[in-house]
Image (cartoon, rainbow, N blue to C red):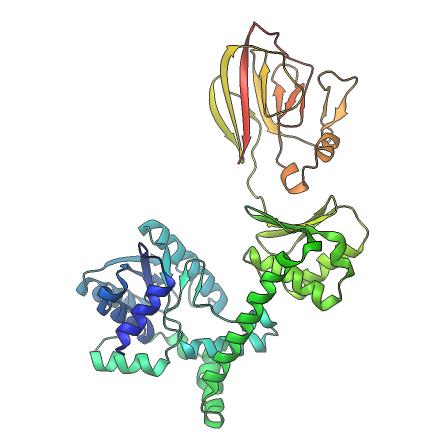
Length: 440
């Protein structure tokens, strides 16, 4: 089978039919070959291609690569989008990779691409397995690069570097050699030029062996990731951006089983949890505490509350103190509050996400420790924190719960969905402010 057909069929399997694909092209042999093969196989895959290039600003000659990529795209009639990072000559592999991925995501978003196509091949996969092994990765890390994960698509994983080099030579393609790829200060470059050739001399099929190991590790990870949902005792619950399980059963499992389950839950949210953070979660479970919170990754938190352990995306956006408009809709963090002047038709109730207010100035803010409210139909005042706990609002949502406050005397008149105050209650038949609240 022709190489362009093989690669195009791989792209066909990995992307939906209406996908616009951002092809990441550095100007090197592999990515130039990828672009040329996908362009030649357009009739096979039928995808819309956009060429994306990231100039890291590390090497002084990187402008040559920018010009080359632009020319290669234009001669094929393809749109090209370019991002510049200006990292400087001292940038590390990790910093460059982080900046590159962020830039590619931004380029994809700007051009409407739903897939970012990368030129990683079988030799890259073997190097990744070795790198992960040297860094002490577990089975999840040894799974290395997936053919598709999120927007990242790799249609060349079944091909060798030599296959692509032969295509470049046969097609007479011009490429750019990034000096960083041969710099032994970078661990991957050292493996590529100093270690892999020695291994290949002794074990000619070492790349295939390492590729097979990554497939086995990936299959094991897929099986492990599916396991927590299948264990009835864990009472698995999943919502947007959060997964929770019963906490008590986890403390009864043997350590390897428990750790594998916790790691699998975190991977469902797209993060890999290292041993140190995993140990912190285990200590929280064993501590006897009824609540607690552990940051397990930059974007994911593990939270213990109401007998359940919840992994969820960290909530970083909140809102301050804002006036409540007398009509229209406003957003306060993830909450939307809509107000309209209207005659009050029935008596105001204590609970619910809808209420009526006596016309007047009000503000909305997140609740704060020490806040108290005098419940409608009750006696005395109660702490808002207690009411939120009694309503079984998990801590991750509790932190950003809004309260509606009188702008005249700072009295809390409503905690949406939790409690209506006895203050500022209009009588049926009078004019009032009809207020609806929803939480996204």
